[in-house]
Image (tube, rainbow, N blue to C red):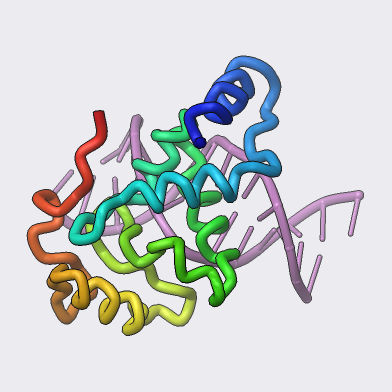
Length: 125
DNA sequence: CGGCTGACGACCT
DNA sequence: GAGGTCGCCAGCC
């Protein structure tokens, strides 16, 4: 689980700046898989859950590396801190992500922003 | 080998 | 409250 590797990353905080290791993807995937259907989380929350607040960008990088075959990782439940659907470079929100969210009962407006985002945001202990 | 980019976020003007 | 800046780190040019 991610909790086990979390220690390793936390130790990286104290020492030099080695942060992202081999298991980083797996940890990110674990956190994403922990998000129940109908709820969403943010890149920053995942990063924080891994014990590294500032690696939200690398979380995005890890999710971008998910192969299309990997349908067991609900990457579409991950949005940015504003509750907007991730934009993949072309500047337009992913219609696929919007459809996947809609299939779970999550409303997304025209701007690509999740309706009732704070209410749907996953609560972490 | 140096510099820029990117599915981001917190902090400072 | 809105907008700019810095940090973070793996890939790519």
